Length: 302
Image 1 (cartoon, helix red, strand yellow):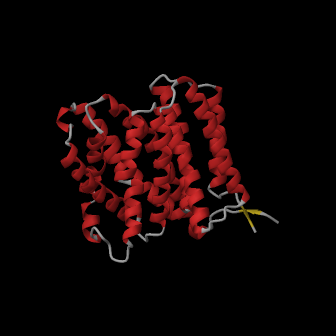
Image 2 (cartoon, rainbow, N blue to C red):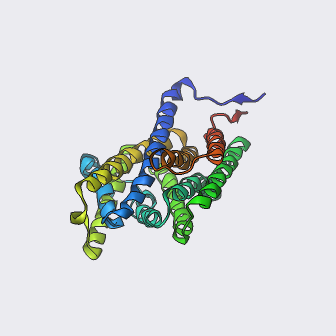
Image 3 (cartoon, one colour):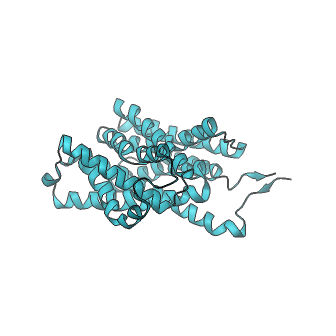
């Protein structure tokens, strides 16, 4: 007889931390999409924002990466490279370039919606993961809900070719980070620190080549990016997501990213006056159901 799989007493606190970390992550990412899109109206380029995003956590987490070293013993360089590329410098440059040229609503939908699917596919193809029927149904619901949101958004705001090409690439990069971090043996704080410092060094090199426009930006614009990019996205969200991956597993944690486009669409309706109607409500319900199924909390135990 099938039973609902719920965390045991010994694992309940870790699972609760994982769910909390996942929800904190998607809440921050919803604001990150809007903040990154807003930066297109300022003198700040993607290199400038990258310096802010990774410079702030590099400073705040200096005790952590100084303790581990830039190349921690026992950590394969390939795993570190995938982590830095997947959630660090390459991921940021790809997604920021796409969001600068793409309306926030469809951009957030395509990026956030593709992440759980890419993570699940990598887990199945490369690591032999075998999601049960409940989780597969959840992924299908996520795809359906995102499709509804995307179609509704395209009718009003459009999508650029850069968005169609770069945002799925960004989702695939993040999926690679998810699996690499899970196998790295690093804590969430160590992972956040190493991604930050390496990405900051890369952006310093980019700034040396292409220059910066930080001095041309207003203080309010800089403050917005320091808060949303450096503190929330670069530090808090990276740590929170790492906590979720450690507690829930890569594919299950990534399933929560599908909530990001729903929240971004709601935020657009509330703060930017973007349309919000039956399609958005239906998509929110479908995606929410898909996330619940994809986490495995409702999967039958044999």
